[in-house]
Length: 326
Picture: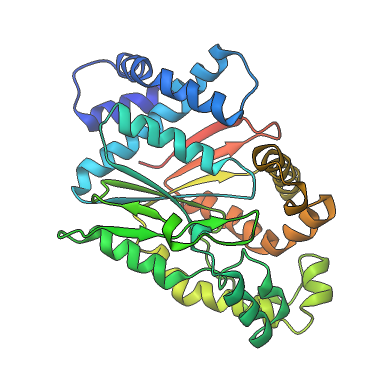
């Protein structure tokens, strides 16, 4: 299967070398930085041979595909990378960035929709005006979507000007100060936009009536919260997501795994920042993912069919299969 995929990709690249030669050449150039990244993040506890196999079988073919799309467009390429909570989208985005930067010499920018969350103060204001559930970050409506739209517009202009992008501190549940924002000094060639709801589509109004969990049943009895979220997807978010050129979707096995993986993510955060009281407990996580459940389930239905690349995940977090839609 890998050989067939790479044959198609190499034909599009118009290279004279064989598909496996291209993979091996790329692997040799990026594996040092790739393995260094895995070690730094403490992501995989596997044999090196297994990690190299994933590099060749999964990440290099996707990177070739992305580079081909960029060369065809000849302008900043926006790639959306979406998946459920804790599925590993940030990891995948960073690995693809390493390959695109080192092997293809591309100027790559990786951003997360999480960094565009509204401030704690803004969400508290929404909670008072619209619904108490908006105090919790996550769903459409809790992002500064106009800021994201402005960024997408700015990077596509010929006359690019230096810009700053927000950074969100999850341990404090608020934005970093402007002095700690990301600085983009040069027009990026490829932008990887990762996030749990990137590419999400609105549901039919009648689909909102039946609650999908206890949170909706007990705390959104009048459908105010989920109706408002759905309206945001119909309008502002639809407009911004349409600016993304292609989508990569990491399909989780089921929603139970989202809870398990999100819990693992919190435990990892504890080790990273060493502040236990700022991290969510088991029950906190259980409640937290209920905010994401409806849209996550709908995305599994929608993006499994519409995404340009679908990565099928197994329960052990391994990528079982990749589906390319050239």
